[in-house]
Image (cartoon, rainbow, N blue to C red; front, side):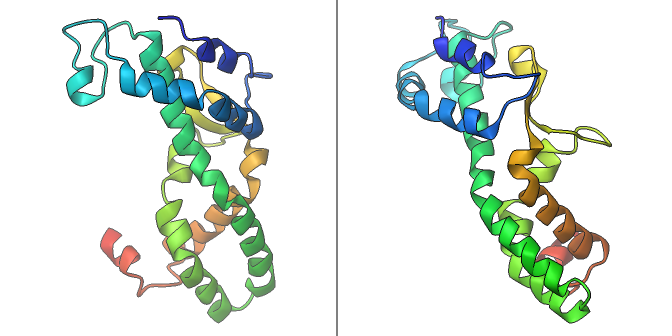
Length: 185
């Protein structure tokens, strides 16, 4: 089964990079196709475990499975972007309080849910693929034969926000009574 969405996605690439706006538009453009395939497709290989596990066990993956997997990974990634505006505002607040230990602790406490829970995996999942990452690695080459990098400028506030939070929370342990910090120690 040839899926035009896969070639349409590949064509969005500019200098081996995707913009978040292009990813978001692609998700919207192919939403109905995704729903149709998700609920109506099954792997043509009768020995495949897809219908039981949702994971294709075939050596060569069908285009429909590749499309479903790509769409789901991009959709999951896109949920993080909703925190970009919040992160921008919190960075402005942090700039005002960064020299006051008590206010910094209050900033960490206020942001523990978003930085410590909602976005906990963001940096580990998309930004820790090297010691000096330049972009966000959203999907590695094992799926489609090429890496899908999204420009960090589309997430610059969230990245900075999470890096500051991680430094204060995990490294400096400015909020030692946190249940989350206690759970990881």
